[in-house]
Image 1 (cartoon, each protein chain N blue to C red):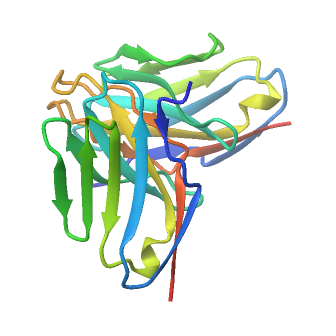
Image 2: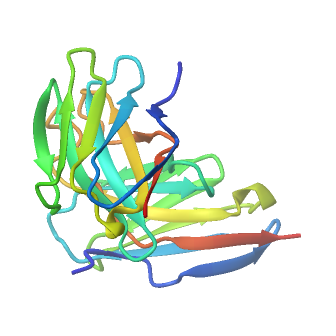
Length: 116
Length: 113
């Protein structure tokens, strides 16, 4: 049972344009969401997160939007740069604020290619 | 601040053997989690340790075990290796102050032949 889904395995965007990566979840207990970027042969790198009490969080070129009623989140990258080419994973967890990290449930990833 | 380090980076073992992987978290981080990444199953949670205690466990057989030491360093052990255990094993650490951002190491690539 895939509780976190990224239905687009790949996405190609021109440099300077907006990249929109989507993620859906089914578990209503999830209350904290994260995006990670992963290059080959490296561990995932944390990008941005959002708590379920918010619907938007912005950090530089990266913005994450959360639609709780639709159980959907998206990552916007503006403007896209060639160095953004990587696999992007969304992840979800619950029990925020317990003082410990909880297990992350990952989506299957979307490979973003930013072309010149 | 140094990042999460994992040793060894690459490992080749044969079926039936056992293996121990090591992870050193970011200084000051007390939570360490382990994940397995395979092409078929993606990134899957193995277990989480905090203050030397296992706090969460994923759906893996008992052949997969771990521990955490008083300095927060962690090890995971896989006994009686199977071909399907070939994967990238990732360790992640986070601070204890209610933040869930986990910072990953580069991983250990385990190949079972």
